[in-house]
Image (cartoon, rainbow, N blue to C red; front, side, top):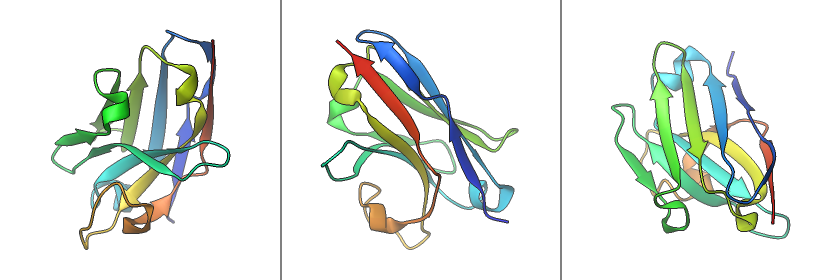
Length: 124
């Protein structure tokens, strides 16, 4: 069974922190690089950070120095640590497994499995 489940979203004030988790079934986790995306109402889905199977990371400029992606292979889980949160970080956050065919990690169409999303709301 293919499964990806996000958790950890919530409401915080600007400057606060949250840690998102994405638990993936073993077949997905061991075979795919993993990304975090976010989507605000009326906006396109935006790639936030990406981590390869070996642990190499890439991030969007908008979260540089504030967000960190990591993975725990013992738990088949990918994390997104978000610090110094800003109101513009407010969005639904999704984890996604990238296809093995390549293409930009920032492109949602290059991802084959998605979680249901977890809402992050940052107030000023």
